[in-house]
Amino acid sequence: MFDNLSDRLGRVVKNLKGQGRISEDNIKETLREVRMALLEADVALPVVKDFIERVREKAIGEEVMKSLTPGQVLVKVVNDELVTMMGEANESLNLAAQPPAVILMAGLQGSGKTTSVAKLSRLLKERDKKKVMVVSCDVYRPAAIDQLETLSKDVDAEFFPSTPDLKPVAIARSALAEARKKFMDVLIIDTAGRLHVDEDMMQEIQELHAEIKPVETLFVVDSMTGQDAANTAKAFNDSLELTGVILTKADGDARGGAALSIRQITGKPIKFLGVGEKTTALEAFHPDRLASRILGMGDVLSLVEEVTQKVDQEKAAKLAKKISKGKSFTLEDFKEQMQQMNAMGGIGGLMDKLPGMNQIPDKVKNQVNDREINRLIAIVNSMTPHEREFPAVIKGSRKKRIAAGSGSQVQDVNKLLKQFTQMQKMMKKMKGGGMAKMMRGMQGKFPGGGGMPPGGMPPGGFPF
Image 1 (cartoon, rainbow, N blue to C red):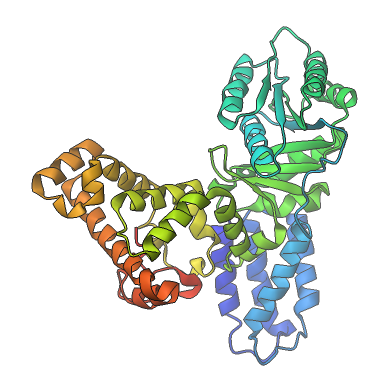
Image 2: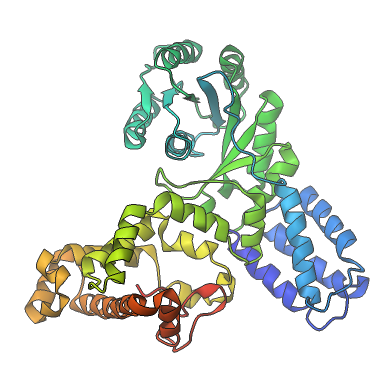
């Protein structure tokens, strides 16, 4: 997300190098570039105009401190204004109501609404320890009811059954009564997707809203639709009092115009970002962290949160203890590390949050991808327990068998074993002098011969 915008803004900042202060003369061209970058990111024109004017007012005449360059001063001003534009801070769900707190989900057809219901259920269960019930009031698309039932099993949420012959208001009323009876903390109601802002269907959701009085009414919108996402959210908000927005498919949107426009056009906060198809792929929306990512400064706080929530702490502790005692790092351990990476949204999601990633060429970043990680896991899965414990036994005929079993080539098996050996050497370095010693040992050991660039990312990617 925001790849194009990040690249453009990075070039803009470089052009200000060597100036003593920011003036009308040297900022005019710079702001024109920032304006073009935002318009190319599909940010709504009125939003761009306001943003540029605010940046101009704050930046002109800013004295450049000894420790800063004009480019860095501009980055700070742009960062502050991006945060203001998207909302000052994360606005969480207001669930401080008499249980069950009712969340009503609205949105256009195909925006990812039903999947977002499941993602939100999982988040509330795992992060907030809430008992969650879900129900579908989409009586026009029977497959939606079946889809929600399947997803609810996946996230371990209580599913309230409904049928297409019932009225949506009647379904919601029954679900609310059942949620009270079962002492649920939260009831999430999925509504029918609209192809557009249709008068009859809007009336139906207004009746639903009036009947169940939700504490949260969330509009689910596809970020790939850019400015249209903000305009559709506004149209819904005019008919229905929204409390927030869930922006889906943010991982596939290289422009990010919707995220930058929605708050200013609708006055409503983005509360969550959908960043993948898995039910774990929902992030709380933090404007300050996103602004940092746009400007290539990474999002270490979100990364730390993901590690805390998604990494199996018990397995991680067991591995650390094993290594510290000098025991060998095995291929089974190697596979577990890759699975933990996948649990955190894959290497793409991880790299997106690391500082300095915009400085690394795409050719290098593309060498390490989630498909490659899954292929490595498949290769290890094709090995016997003995081979995983003692990789030295893997010779010619075994390599052929492993390659055939994992649908890969013998050279892929060789490549994995080489990468594993590098990882094993690093783990050995952790035994005596800990992490600092290991980091010193990593200098120059990666493809390309370099050490660690800004943000701690090895030039050739991670050791796997």
